[in-house]
Image (cartoon, rainbow, N blue to C red; front, side, top):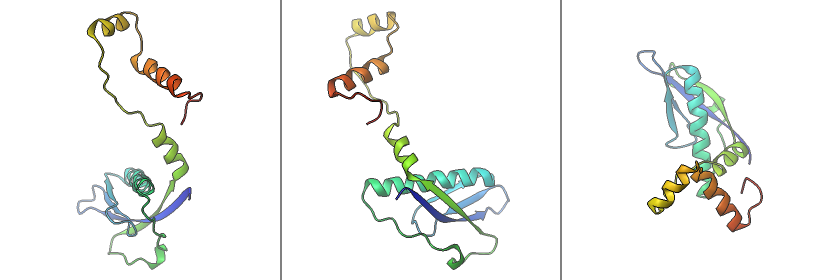
Length: 137
């Protein structure tokens, strides 16, 4: 599935300085934000991360509860949060990771002197070795 919408429970903190956000259907999926907008953004990020990890481990993704069926504590409220997994998958596939490379000092110095971009050159060489023509896997 490419689009999920899960109900998130927003609980204002005691001092009115932010919100804690939980997903009743997703154990351990919790986040917070200092403002409502920040909390919404953090909730979407938490949901996307949770679902992406579930997909990676082939864990079942539960059906979202209907908001009207959830029992809420006083002062809390529900906000539906969307996750567009096709976008998340693309983002994660193209995520940049750091890799250490060992070179002789003289070679590193010569390349830096000629202003060679190590990351770009390594990517190009690996794609060439693997026969990859396009930019994405």
